[in-house]
Length: 162
Image 1 (spheres, one colour):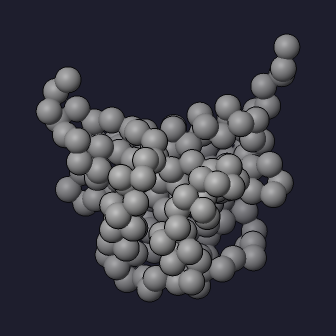
Image 2: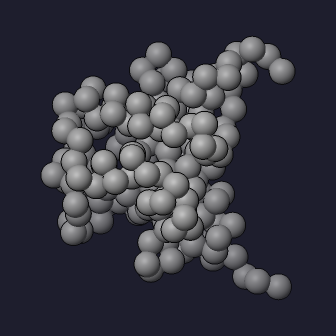
């Protein structure tokens, strides 16, 4: 395996601190405050995401976590894509796309009918990525985030069970 090989890996307890650091960094970079919902998911990813049927993935470059993305199980059977980031020095190489692909695969494997996300209109590159990945805009939805002013979803074609 090449030292610089990029991998997408699932969360382990060893990722707890880097999960929080990666997300705190992108929020600060975007000029956003850590909100109450952020604290819940960043301080307790096992209880707030994994134990409730969700997933967390990390992008690793040379064995170092340089990005992450969470997938929260929703009451309607869909999954919310949350806390997606890639460190600035690792951007532009397709890691964000690979994180989204891992999230979609996990959601499809669970039989989900959609992916949903909330984001900010100030995050232009992220909005472009989501649109290219098949997300479409939704009308405003209830949200715990002051920064959220864009709501999107990607409908997943249900797989016929044989």
